[in-house]
Image 1: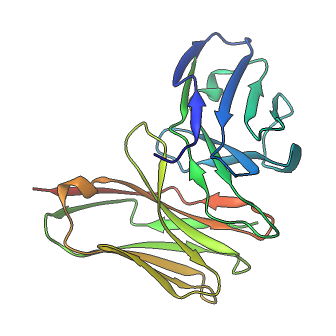
Image 2 (image 1 turned 120 degrees about the vertical axis):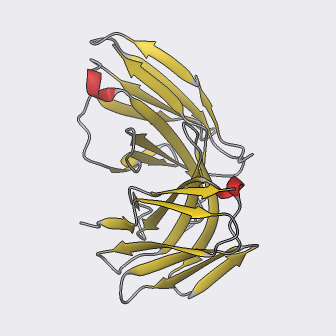
Length: 114
Length: 111
């Protein structure tokens, strides 16, 4: 158990809808990163939040957005869902104090867009 | 742009064999490198973290080495067991905490 929890574990949405995924970071961690993992691929970096500010973004369109709250939990929002958004979404938390330390992942949210 | 490659993509071995998984990266300016295990449809479990100043890390039957100058890391698994069957991912981390993954090596250990 890493202490990083994601909800929900699975969900099915219709193309064009919006979805919010949630992540509770490990106690004491101040950084949350989100990744999209398509079947048979490695995780792709979406964005990272450090102390409630976006701190880096991968090659994803603006319809992927996020938030980090004062307790360092985080949300990933995806608008106007497309079929290709179907994937496993992973959240990782870490402690960053000047330099990045070990990242711990949640169990993921499996999103299916139909 | 950092590119991470893992070879082989898949590996099948009999139980008890020692094996080596390879990871290469194009930009040697990394802060650390982390090896993960992923079971089908699950999240990632951290196995070993190697800081850029280190050459290797060991945990039980696992040993990971890092040669930053040549852009390579290896994960050595001793005396493999069927429970080791999973996908193994390596990820390199830049100083800005940008983490890039390889596509993974899918390992099957046959009883």
